Every structure is written in structure tokens, then in C-alpha cells.
Image (tube, rainbow over all chains, first blue to last red; front, side, top):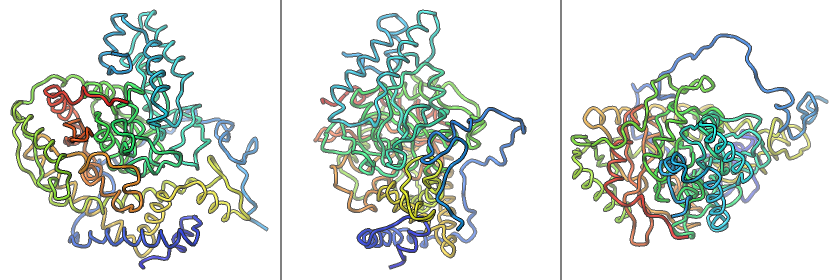
Length: 92
Length: 484
């Protein structure tokens, strides 16, 4: 097994049940093995492509523009007050 | 013929002549939805009231002498594009109650052209899948055989167009999600060049690959939709500052002397023999229209699926980090902040989304980044170079869209890798960022549609539209509709 599903799940902020752990382990292992196919290729001097079209630094004038109101931005919050997002307490 | 059976161009002419009204068209499409939706399940949300309101506005504008290119045309939108005030779920439990406070650029532009919104269509959760079986809500059925999948991830949009539940639709395509369902449902699907259409308001899956495009009944209709949605948008910094052609201007031009590349790597073992023969027959048809087939090679084709799944899952793991139960969407309470995050994401995401987030987390994690992510970016360069090399000698490249016709529900759900291989012919196009179209090119003995794919140079959708329209008009495939 290449991976620890439990460790990976924690990094990704996911819970996995024991039965999911086994299934995901087998599936992810299979997919990662398939991905290793890429090692057949010599890419020593090949530049990586992160984006297919070369647009660099799209800039605009720094002018104020209309944006979402606070009220609109908070309408979808599962636990919002009039002014804030509320989250579980993080400091004792 | 009922009004819902027509395409955009025909309805446009009928509206212009005063032979029908936007309200009549909307009523026809809505009653078609009422008649078949139970069997097709294309829509997450049907926007009946909005449709009639928008149709009434279109009719009022007609009486005032104002009309735009899509005035009164019913269009369905994949449910991963934000529509202000109308739920946008991505077919995910985590966004089940999300009502966007803003509008995507594509729907804003369709609105400027007077479209009528019929609703939001089903997809594989967050567009991750090839069958809609990964939808968090239900699976859409193929209108040609409701025991089969419609393809994905834009399966709801393709099924809705094929079933007459809208006149045209928008889909999004990260690795084939417009073209593969269009192929499997017997309709036209165009993935534009990366950067051609603004992604503002499209819920992000893999940002360097995602692109919005039309799913329509005819090639001409795809060109009409492109005129409405394409073009630079200051709200999307990756939308390209290139000239905007009139995409309909090439419709009807002949293709004499056009060089069509046939990549040998795409005619592989394991391809369905009926797909193979339909596509070969299409090549002969194009030849009879004056096109010249030329063998080309895309030598890194075999590495595309592996490259894609490294890059797409890496980008997805980063993009989907935003679903944290704080700003919008589902929240599941936990004993502390970390517990709340983990419960929210575990309950909100389905298994395929979790698999991809974990894969992407792995390939981006310290110690593995170079081996997977950077390696895949380098192979992406090689795949992109393959296309550049091939396009030195040909005007477009022709391949099958999908190696098989629509498969049965449940046939591939146990093995994610098998499902990934369903995208084997469409994925390279997203990696290279080039445009591609799928058009119907025949039917199997079981009456399932087959599609062919044409791939073009960057920002050369016009050659694709010209060639696919010439082919379409010399065949009858696009006139067949499923009997539901």
C-alpha cells in the first residue's frame, strides 16, 4: 500500500469510516500505480505547463467598484449573524 | 412537429415571421418536461415561473420591435454555473441549499440576448465523472435507452437537449464533460479553446482545464450560442484578449482541400467495432465533400489519462478546500473547529469527490509534488507539443469522441479507473487547451448514438464549425430523435 488513507483524509479534512478506509486504500493505490506510467517518459529538459495560454499579470486600474453587500455575502452562511460568520470557538 | 422539437435557428425564423411567440415555445418545452422528465431526470431544478416570465418579457420586446439573437429561446444551464436567486447545487449535498448572490458571466450574456431559462441540469457531483452516476441526488437517463447513462459530467444538459426538454443548453468540459455526453445522447457539443469563454461564476473544479460551451441540436445552433457567450471578460483574468469572430459566418462554407488529420493512436484495440466503423464511414463522407485525410501522430496520447488525473485532482483538492461549512453550504456541527470541518466535508461530499480530493492532496503533498504534479505538468507540455506538431500539416484532427456508445447504469461504478478511461479520447484536448466539437455520426445496431470529435487549433473554432456543419448537412443523423 502506497498510502495511509487515514493520514491523507486528515490532511484533506475528511473523516473516513473503517470500511471506506479499506475501499479507498485499494482504489487510490490502483490509480496511483496507473499514474506511475508517466515515469516511462524522460522529461529532464521539459518545461512544465501550468497554463496553456500565456497571459501574464492581468492588471486593472485600482478603482473602487461595486461589490457584494455584506448582507448578500452573509445570506448563504450556515451560521451567520448580521455582521459576521460564526465558527466554533478556537481559543480556550 | 411540436415547437420543442426545433432548434434555435428554426425557432428564430418562426419568431421573426410572427408564426409563434416566446410564450408558446416556453409552454411547449415546459409541457415536454412535464411529459418526460420523470423518465429522463435531466433537471435538478426546473424554473417554470422564471421561464414564463422571461418568455413574456421576450414577447413584449418583440412587440416593441426589439429582438436579440436568443430572444425567447429556452436554454438549460448545467447546475455548476451561478444563477442569481436560483439554487446552484453542483449536484452536491454540500451545496444543496446554495442560492448564489451573483450571476455567472455566461448567463448574464445569455440574458442580454433574451434567453429563457428552463432550469438547472444534473451533473456528476462537481463535474467529476462521466455518467452522472456521481450526482449527489440522482442519475440522469439516456433518452435513447433509459437503462443507460447519458454520459457526463454534463449528462443532464445533453439529455435535456436530446429529449426536447430545452432547445439548447450550456455544459462545462474539464476532460470531455461536454463532448462525451453530447456523443452518447446524439447531439452537438462544443468545448471552446481554453480562455474563449469566461469562467466567472462557474464553480471551479480544475481551473486550468475547465471551459464552458454549448450543447445543441445542430452545429449552426452551437455557433449561435458561441456568439452569445464567448469573448473577453474582465471578471475572468484567464479569459483571452483575442478577437471575437462571428462564429456563424463560416456556416455553409465548403471544405474542399481541407486537411483532416487522423491520429493512429486513437484507433485502438478495445474500441467498440460499431464506433470504429461509424467514424471510418464519416471520414469517407468528408472525403467525398473534398476534404483530404492525412495520417498524423499524437505520440503521447497513451499518457493523457494519467497526466489528466494528476493535474485535475491536484487542482480540485485545492479548489474544493473552500467548502468548510463557514461561508456557504452545508455545516455539520462538531466538537471543535477541526471536527466541524471534517464532519461537514465528510457528510457533504460523495465518494468520487472524496477520492479525488485525497488523490490531489497526495500528489501535491510534500515529497510527492515533483514525482507526480510537476512530472504531469511536464508531460502536459509534451502532449501540447504533439498537437502543435500535428497542426503544422493539417487543419483539424478527427477522432471518435468516446470509445463506446452509452453504457448501462452501474456498469462501471465499482472501478473508478475504468470510468476514467471512458474519457480517453477527450482528455488530451483539455490538456492542450485546444477547441473540439462532437457531432453525431451514426447509430449502433441497438440504436445508440455515436459521435465523432473534431479538434482544432487554438482559437480556431471556425474551422471546426465549418467542417462539422458540412458533414452534418451531408448526413441525416442530426434529424433523428429518441422516441420517449
